[in-house]
Image 1 (tube, rainbow, N blue to C red):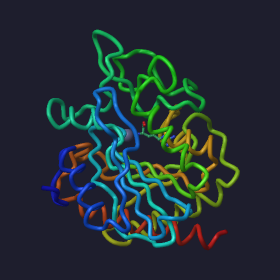
Image 2: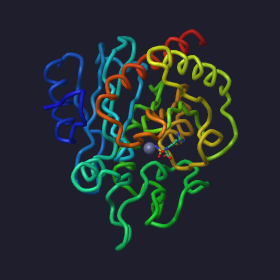
Image 3: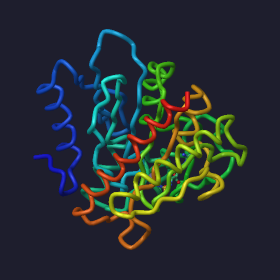
Length: 287
Ligand code: 0X9
Ligand code: ZN
């Protein structure tokens, strides 16, 4: 079954989500957010203490890149928000990375005879194909033939649209490099509220470092790592102007990279949670 000290398979994660919704049925609802090329359902949970109202909501996605096993992020639950948590955004790639190629990143859509998949974080329809992507199906940053060519991104965009107006935060979890990234990836222009989001980011990184000394850098995607267009985070920020949008690049800084030792899962979760709470407290203080 599911555990926090090792990497869980897709089936284990989905069973765990289902169990949560049964065990805590007054608070947790299992959601079928979207579906994939290979016919899998993209499962998530909605956690809400007042399920009959439309509340301010927070959306968490992880594993849009298959090999970046970031264990799911249901933990401390603030009663004042509705939480949408989708631990595996790219289940076809995730399953493939467990069964066949641990270093798989992309979807599994057969765009060419030679190479499978598109980068699901270059495929979203907001300034799609505006730099930092490739039109070659054999690269890791293949953007797909058209925006939302991938069933998984297209269907999840539809789901996110259904709650888009309620979102106060959208957080995307990746690995690795220890960065807290701010939109955008498609341009070097700063957000209107960049200063606020940057300062909150610095405080979050400080809180994260306090537990084990893990150091994070804070900055925009474009300026801190590289130009990258068509990401889910850019799309959410651009389309809904969600106030808080961050992308985490979790541990480590390349020593183990994508194959982070399982003993580091819980420490990573704890320090991330520290920063996460800080983001919300600081944000609430700043409005
Ligand atoms: O390149 C990516 O998609 C992400 N880095 S990774 O090494 N995990 O592949 C960063 C994407 C960040 N993009 C935006 N938030 N716009
Ligand atoms: Zn990634």
